[in-house]
Amino acid sequence: MSQPRLLILGPPGAGKGTQSANIADEYDVAHITTGDALRANKDMDISDMDTEYDTPREYMEAGDLVPDAVVNAIVDEALNSADGFVLDGYPRNLEQAKELEDMTDLDVILSLSVSRDELVDRLTGRRVCDDCGANYHVEFNQPEESGVCDDCGGELIQRDDDNEESVRNRLDVFEENTAPVIDHYEDHDGFVAVDGEQTPDGVWADIEAAIDGRTE
Image 1: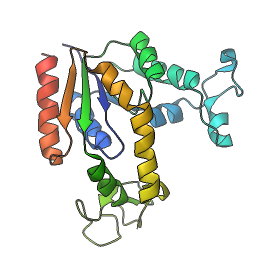
Image 2: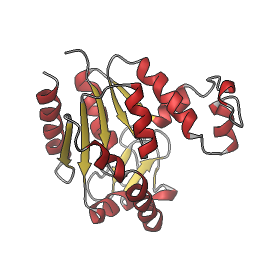
Image 3: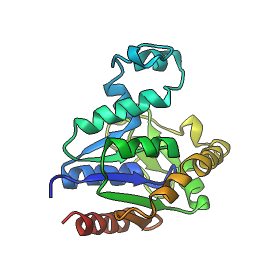
């Protein structure tokens, strides 16, 4: 078949970004995230949408949340521009899931499952390069030199929202808003639950098998 249309779901810290990058490389599809899509279309004309601002850039510069209607339009534009894709970080709620059904037909929906305690350990131990954004972990993925990025030599920091209180709050928000999206997709023919607590290579092996088995 042509390049697959994939959706990856899971809580913060489940490994969606890592596995999405693997998928994009292996299957030659676009990796679409809401953040990237917003940045790529920040000057999109939304003056016809009766919103407070006329471009997404104005929301971002004001530090305001971009309305769902604008996010939906930007994701739609990104999907229409891609021959195949892995969509990561959208939909975040049932309303967005229903919008997505009008935008495209999905071939495979991957749901990464990880326990709450494991997610807290992963996120509170995460360290990010302050220069290039590369990710490390104090236990699972340590740099060659403590506190120094292997890729660019930048300083490794803990993000403000990776402290335990913030992490638990983010997981609560996920459970309230996004977990119902997973339930919504469970009856889809392409839905596959993946054990996200395996090694990254183990998770990738299951993902690759799931995609190949449903897109032949």
